[in-house]
Image 1 (tube, rainbow, N blue to C red):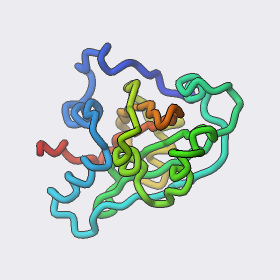
Image 2: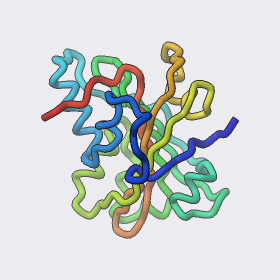
Image 3: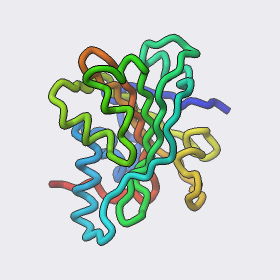
Image 4: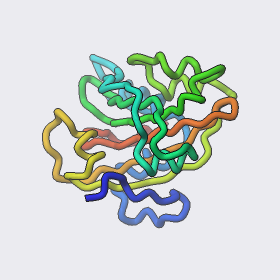
Length: 189
């Protein structure tokens, strides 16, 4: 079993095999946090939006993450895993890999987010640029599927996700977002 998804460039894929409900979430280049907040508000959520911090630690990125970030395999980075929730329904699992060099200067705040959404911080800073975006699908039993669904009702369906490379003041970070079974329709407005 591969521990890493097989990523492909979003513009090089026909998108025919991606579920229609998930496709607009995958292809939207704006802030996922803002979209989730909007969908949560449109759904009349009483409990509202929140970030569930699953963990944040110093660790080794997966080899594919290290290659995408252009850092040597085996080097450590700050790894953060969260879920985005609306009314305690888990909609998105996200994994961020932030090289320690990125945590200086303009990126210093990224190491101390707690339960604040990373997307809100990134998209509020005009210096931040999103560069590459890739898509992937993982089946049940895959490492990412297990992490995303940990503690949730078992899902026998595949999960679709995207990963984006962000640059802030010349330094990079990687954000992978996986769309969970409770994800609602993409908000049109």
